[in-house]
Length: 503
Image (cartoon, rainbow, N blue to C red; front, side, top):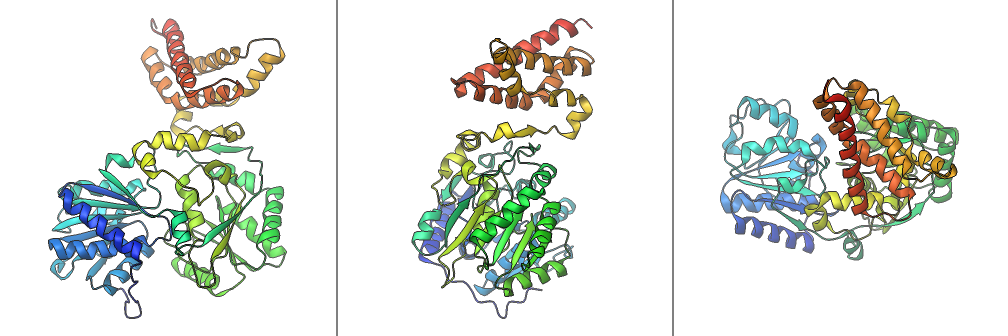
């Protein structure tokens, strides 16, 4: 049961009212089987906007609206806003097995996994749904629900219209993107607080890239858990943010606990929070954080979405990420405006600003929606030597298929410079790399066709290596890299054919 007695409806700002009108008009114009994606920065009021859209859709069509979230806090927050503007709704949580009184509700709010279980048991679990609204639409878990509502409309809402899985781009499911107000525009208009950014150069040598494309938790804990990084964090806090209510984002639990210990030794008011906490303990920590003016909260993977504490004065990124979405989510936790808060401080200890640019910078989200690979590639490689400092982390299935330790031992950058020092052309490093890949595949393959399967598994690793090589040479273009990968793969396939095809 949602307690709404003390909840007051949030009034739409002019830009929000304009957005509601344009989205409703777009849905009306295109009719059924049209899916729309809407982008708006964190702090722009997405919940208020899509709640009003739900109300207008219900009034115009007399059809029901289904709102999907991935956190129970977001479900409750949305339900309260809907009740406050007169939309009778029901939250479908794990306790709701059946809805006997569907006609009493115009709108349903559900977490994706719970609803998916119900729909697999009964595809008519919720009937007469004309519009599905997806909060935090960049998460791919929502896709499994779409098959049940193909006859209606889907409205996805996100601050960053980039899929959490680059192999499943959002333009596969959405016909069009509407871009809302930019961060800089919302700051200038007085809706968001501005970020005063402080960057500290950090040595990220030792980070590894995982199968999801971001740095692994285990390697991040090793880098950020050491004494020198803890000291750098403490120095940055004391230089910039002493006395501020501060939210620290860490990659791993071990690092966060060390942060808590380090700050406590210096007498600071700090607590740690991660996803293993019970609901009661989590609420206790957040209540303490809200009511303590000088509180420092060291967190792990739990407060990037569905968390709204406007009194935060400083955000510290005590981690590196290759996810633009996560970068914006973390910083957005400090952007809430208050009468006495026009600015907040951002301390970057992960070279993230160098990787993605300033939080306030303009981003061409239409380009991101249409060409996500190109958009991300330009941000992860341009003026960024970080790939030299990380290792490729093989997935567990790949490690079971072949002896990847042989590949780990070969460093193409070091091999390139060794060649030059010995008076050999640097291109020899590519041939030596190919021999390294050849040996690992030959030893693991049962025949030529099996070798081709293993070669497919290694495509990303080959590209990773050759990117390192092209950064070593002065004249390199994307077309040259593409040519190099194609030639390398073709020659490697031929070498494998020569030794395995007759076996």
